[in-house]
Amino acid sequence: MLAKYLLKEEGWNEAERLIAARPYTVELAVVEVASAIWRRVTLLGDITPATAEALIDCLLEVSDKVLRVEGQGQYLKAAFSIAVERGLTVYDAIYVAQALERRAALATADAGQARAAMELGVEAILVR
Image 1 (cartoon, rainbow, N blue to C red):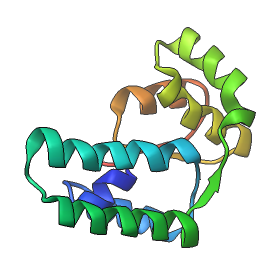
Image 2 (image 1 turned 90 degrees about the horizontal axis):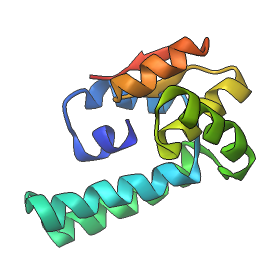
Image 3 (image 1 turned 180 degrees about the horizontal axis):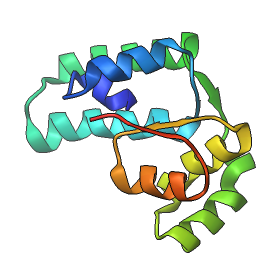
């Protein structure tokens, strides 16, 4: 969802609205978004390195001033169990585990992740 917002991908307006609510996320999200930016520069070639650098600056600012970023270690055991039980990667399951622990909704662009969250009783907001 954060990548949609920064990269102005389809659904970015909805992502912006959700981000404005100051959601919780894990540190992993920042690295995953940086990787999405890297992919756009190196593999797709549709943004320049200078644009990517500006996006990284924006990512750091949003993660520092808007989002409530937590370490993922506290969610790792639960995430691993969720990943095994629901067929998710641990990367995806960590966000579900955080939402479960915080009794919060999960905003995601991943339908499989949303489905697994809902199966566990987590409200899922699928951003398309």
